[in-house]
Length: 302
Image 1 (tube, rainbow, N blue to C red):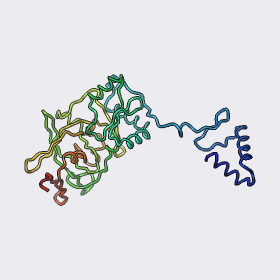
Image 2 (tube, rainbow, N blue to C red; image 1 turned 90 degrees about the horizontal axis):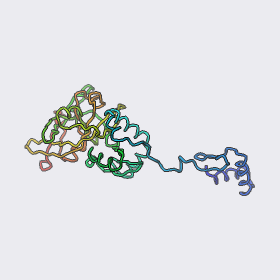
Image 3 (tube, rainbow, N blue to C red; image 1 turned 135 degrees about the vertical axis):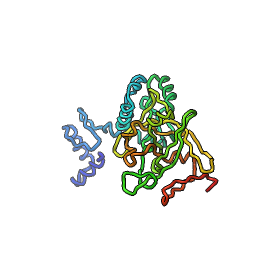
């Protein structure tokens, strides 16, 4: 309630009193330190009323930067927990920044956004993060927008799930680099903005490598926490005609996959293909529910 509103309320109760009289009454109450303050205001020791700092001060990012050596010494799980704590402490600040900048990721240094991107296609590499950190003498925070990790799981076809007569659509993909190649049958989920894969499986097949200071994110799915590392991997799909579409794509590689929430609905799952792969490659996809098959075509074939 504002000061003026209080005056109006008192005037209604004490009809006939002029504004000067009411001001005098309020001043008397203040002089004897009667606590008549309204929400978001405090009374100082001198009796002066002022707005609370919570209501007037802008949001600030809270968090101490780690050195590169401190970050190297953390396990993947500890790095993920560190990220979850940062996001919890700064949830309102991050929500505001992500919304205002329409950002997929933010790089933060000393409480200020120093870089951001509108997709994970330009997510900074470990080398780039290291370069920026060495230049500034401290490791910046790098945080991915949680909306990109959100998954709207639903049952469907193809891969059987833990539910009776329920199947998950599957797509056949190949993930590779210059020297290694891995074919997978990934569960296809249009409710997921990003794509996820088993970190240890990709490491085992030399599709990715491990860097001691690589940026790790901590997130949550189906009320269960997990850690992941965004890696650029060449993804390709092959059509019956022999034509191939391929593109280097950001894949969120989930650590300790076998104990992650990604296998809750399908224990045999090794990857979840989200929208980003197909928005980049742009095939036409037919989901044949009668025969539980996925058919893919090039744009020219449609």
